[in-house]
Image (cartoon, rainbow, N blue to C red; front, side, top):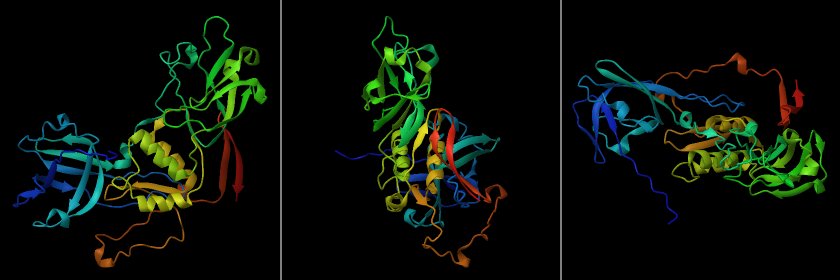
Length: 365
């Protein structure tokens, strides 16, 4: 049908008041005794680093009603905090925080629940596919359980892994895999190297971009299995914002739709984003993979109070969209200047050699 269906159950709590809290057919148990101060802080500019917000909500539990909290399977589930006055309708409340449920702790009469930035929950391992002897029965022991790298854009001198090194007999060709293609096929294989020497195109027996592999004859390889590298183009996605959207789709099952994203702001970021590349061969969390892209394109990736994801490209000349009047402040804003983020010079690293871990550099002082 081309539709996405979302099913959820509401578990709600309200401040302990004399008013029964029913909203849209759901009862909000009056158990909240305190909520952390709601503060907004920006991620550091220029760097693209993700700075997660968190706080603690304390719930009344003197009757033991919440003793089974950990059996309710609420950990890492979505949560939100709404603020309003007693007697308000649900639509009159303002959503001031959207996140996920984190750790909890208890005393005899209270339960403290940590609520965290939704981005902290983007912890799916990237990449997660490994070389194994089920898929590759002739794999050498030294390559078992190595991660299959993921790649976007142009990648230089990345390792290629032989998947039939232990094949019995004398196979005519050996197959090398250079990237994972579960979600995206490779775009091009530019060069193959053995011991740093570039092969002629005629020495490459075959190329299969759909599986991210190529083959070499045994005569060309000459038993040099561990010394094969290649230049290639991974997924044909190079716009930094599009890479983040693809990572979110593949590893967080987050489709790019208006129910999950601020598509207007993200589309504007996509229109001015730099092109970049991404290559990951050692497993990291999804939010760290996204952070790498943000650093490349000077982007802020965040979740709004509405719970929608958004991306914003740093723009010193950006036109303000909101004026916060002094009588709207709950407290005066605070500006923190961290000395470890003060720039005196800039070194740009690019064209990374994935095997040697070296870069071309440009320094501006």
